[in-house]
Amino acid sequence: MQGAEDPPSPRWPSNAPRSEPRQIVVGLGRAFGGALIFALPMIMTMEMWWLGFYIDRFRLALLLILTIPVLALLSSHAGFQKTSDWKDDLRDAAIAYGIGILASAVVLATFGLLRFDMPLDEIVGKIAIQAVPASIGAILGRSQLGGGKTQPSEGPEEVNYASELFLMSIGALFLGLNVAPTEEMVLISYKMTAWHAVALIVLSILLMQGFVYAVEFHGEESLPPGTPWWSAFLRFTLVGYVLAALISLYVLWTFGRTDGVASPEILRAVVVLGFPAAIGAAAARLIL
Image 1: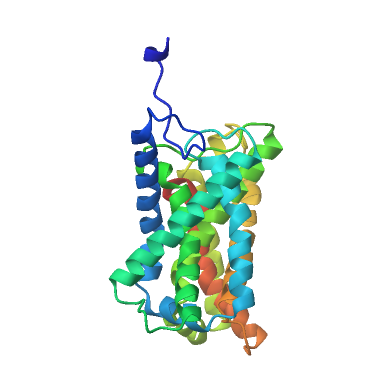
Image 2: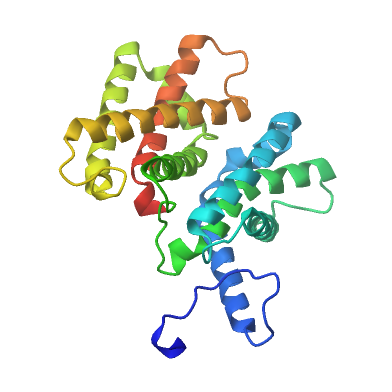
């Protein structure tokens, strides 16, 4: 009987019946709240205000385009209910993008960071770069605010493993985006020696391994109970750190942090940004 079942989780339905306006409002409210949770640390960072003004427009456009499939994949993992096909996921991605743009514009304008006398290019740039983390937060609104948990895709072991790696990538992107624009990140990389970089890599990997077991990846379908520790280390910790490093390099390139910089400095910057990104990857189950 319907009364004995749990009520369906709110979603952004395209053909929602008129008798369910509250579910739509609750779903949109959670999405807006999730957008604020993810975007506020970046909205309140001075370097992000300037990035919206001077960031290379091709790199910004590429970031915005790549965000669309990321949002669609997130919809299949953590949407407001299970999606039936890719069209539903794209619809959720579009709505999440819209909410991310709206939330970013409202907060930036309220802070006095958007004015009518600003060039249109600067206004669009500021909103667009903030809309990326805001849209990710919007589509994760249920797992952040609604008590739901992001779960791996149903299917064979290979699919579940890929789902876990995808969630780890989102966690790395979430924490990496928060610190990548700051000057302190660059300053730390300049103060570090090669030995400091090696020590930070080792520390990052050790902390990731601790999070992998704390979040019990080894108890998921991807790794059955009783799997030796080195299997989790190879499949999640090392692979996760490589993903975090690659995401860090891409973010640094997008924000222009690699322009005119020698390879050793770029490598140290990747190691520095890879530290929070690795923590975000390993703790994705806790922060998403």
